[in-house]
Image (cartoon, rainbow, N blue to C red):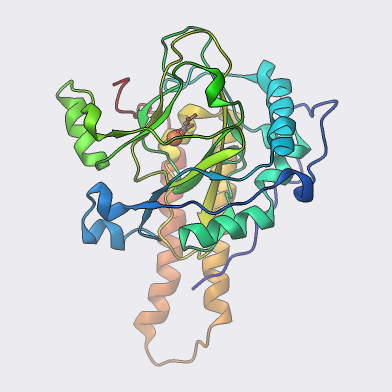
Amino acid sequence: MAEAALLELPAVPPQGYPPLEREPAFDPARHLQLERPDRITTLAELGYGANEIAACPSDFGITSCFRILSDEGAAALLEVCRALAPYATSSGRIPRKVRGAVFQSKFLRDLCLSREVTDFLGEVAGLKLLPHSIPHHLGHINLNPLEVGQNVDKWHVDTLRVDYVLFVTDPATIRGGEFQFFKGTKHEIAELHRDGKAPPPERVVTPRIPGPGYAVLQQGNMVVHRAAALKSAGERITMVNGYVPRDAEFPDYNRFDQIYHADPAHVAASEYARHVAWTGRERLQAFIDQGIYTEDRAALADRLEKVADYLARAGADIRNAGAGKLEHFGDG
Ligand SMILES: O=C(O)CCC(=O)C(=O)O
Ligand SMILES: [Fe+2]
């Protein structure tokens, strides 16, 4: 087991992410209100088989809604998100989103890197976690499209393993704009999408979100989900924060081909390369820290070759990015 330590943000931020001039200071004592979810839907309940579940770091799929921020914390995050709205960009999946805002807002940075929140979420997921080692997977903000009737985000799985989706605005003040997940697997939805079909309504779950500051935690690369369109004009803001398993030996699940479509060219490859360097280093560190004396040459060679192979594959992904398309399963 390679118990990695938090990877700090790069000392030099990328160009084009000016810090906010005024914002509240994050105060965990006042802004956090961590309450455990009542229920977890497992990967087995979503229909995944034993082999696929064994390849995941945990068998949890998605939690029921639970509280992360106090009323005061949610109000402070709303102020920060509104100040960041002018920096929104769009992708083939999401019409209005802000990424990389942890470089612009210290409040968001402190919340997204909070050790208290990370450890709490790790207990909920049954899996030790670290804030994501790719900075653009921290503090991703979704803003409602300016056009009513356009989905906030299409049906998809995330390009990272573990994340929460937190309501920053109050869902009770808008019509539509629900977060929904599919009670099924990504293979089933891919087949439906190929046949031009939407997910059957009886298999679409809409968690009840009691108010701002509440979230769901999911194994985002396994749970098919979306953010539905608003039915009338209103404000809908969510914040999605990503995590990696603290054990760096788990197969790295990061879809660089997909990230490359979501983030600027001077950011995506640089952050991914740094993440891969860190993961490789943590795997080598675990090897250095273990007892190494053995006659088993093959086992020793294997440890080194696995890391070399991981680095070489990531290098090839970085060279080849840009050819594929942004993947999703449609608007439903
Ligand atoms: O905003 C939401 O409700 C969901 C967003 C989401 O799934 C994502 O950004 O990956
Ligand atoms: Fe998502």
